[in-house]
Length: 302
Image 1: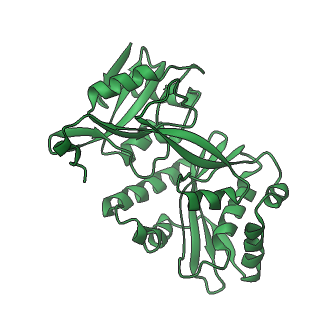
Image 2: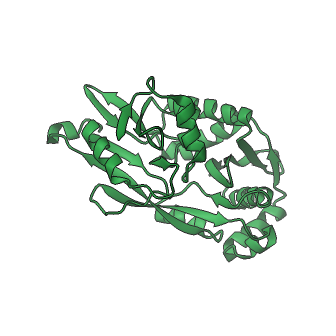
Image 3: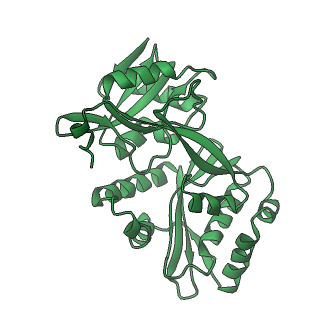
């Protein structure tokens, strides 16, 4: 039986045990991560925590709805068994919420297609080859970027403060994504500090020969996967190969101890094409998106 439990009703130990040991384990689903990045969250629980589905939600006016928080790439269903039917979770979700927008994880494979399940993509790179072999699989323009970064005397540095990356991001990527609010950046700052404290996150920076920060990225480490959660370059100086050096340097560090490098994913063709130029492959996942509201109320999120 699937129960809807509020955050207060949750047995956190059993919940986190399920996330840690699930076939689909992702850092974003742990209670501490959800507590940091969501406004509210509840959970669908199968029997005695044999499987769980965390649900971030907000309320606007009198409507409670499911939303995809910033700084969270994958959620969905997490189960202790390898095979798990997803449809019963979706049915309970539809009974509880009339407006839902939520990402599943790449390991969730719905048995049936639905108009509510949108196809999305992310890009990942196997780290089973050594670094030199991985670089040989870079597209030629990425290889030229690595050479250009060397010629430009760019240097890498691990361990910068989160504030530096956030400042670079806000003044570059952030100018193109005005929907990211001041509160969202404050959440990111808190999240990065918590991950650094837990030793599950690291920051890599790239500086030019005048000690200007020209690229920076925040990497999450969970089990055998490294994920580039947040990154930015200096848009006024994009021809020096800094972002390619950032990613190549991270791959060099993580290649020995991890199996997979997750680029953070994008279904936008231009960004996906860039990630694929590192020799990455595409992994598909689904996003649940539906509303069961009268027309006027369906505009409430706009």
